[in-house]
Image (cartoon, rainbow, N blue to C red; front, side, top):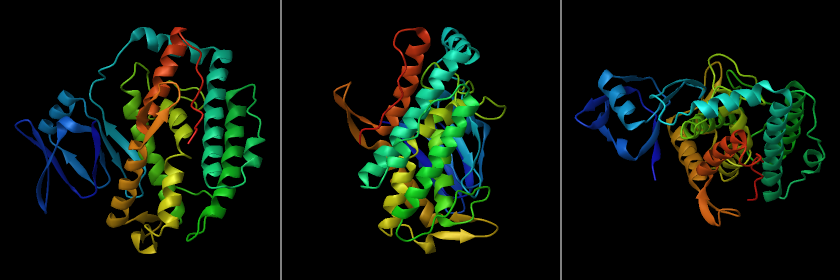
Length: 317
């Protein structure tokens, strides 16, 4: 199974033969390109032309973040999975108001179910979330319901955190420790989702709940939102309450960010959560949480082709 590589130091990615190296003041470190799913760069990293060529040959994207953990952009090799038929049908479903609304509602039901699943696992009161009806006549109305769901979820989630306060969601830059963790985790999940979408025939810029906009892959936002409560928020809760992430793991300037030690701890735990094996009730075998993200893409492809109606993930763990 291929694994992501997280780079938390400045450096240069270069190619020597058929090997990729990260070179910086600490020396030169080989990156196992054949077993790498994607590369995440959390410090300034330069790519040589040889490195870009090797990444393209191996179909390995590289994602870049700013110091607060916000996604800045990607080097994306030419897509290996391309189907004009699927993209046309995907676009037709977006252009048809009724078809788009159905998919958007499914995404929202998946988000709601994941929130409930996490709160159930913590024996928290999820009634206020369960009672919110996912009904709307436009994607804009559904986005309003999504905002309501997140407000309720944040309020309950704050009561579960033992060592940090979480009073409101803020960003760009995050102003406290929990918001710094949420922003970073959401960004990483977004790029992981983007990497998984690239393995299907879907176009990542044609979305259904979020509006497609320039300079973002909004389908990744649609799908990633389903998985946030059961990955990002689960990891934050575990690390904070077990004191694996503490105040000394953060730095401050105009905002709050993890230092290198904290970043490594958080990324390791999130990667472990995404790699966790879950027994799939329909497939009758264990599969990683990360692969479940790709399965959402495959389910959408079948929906667009008319093979099986799409039903978003309802988290069961």
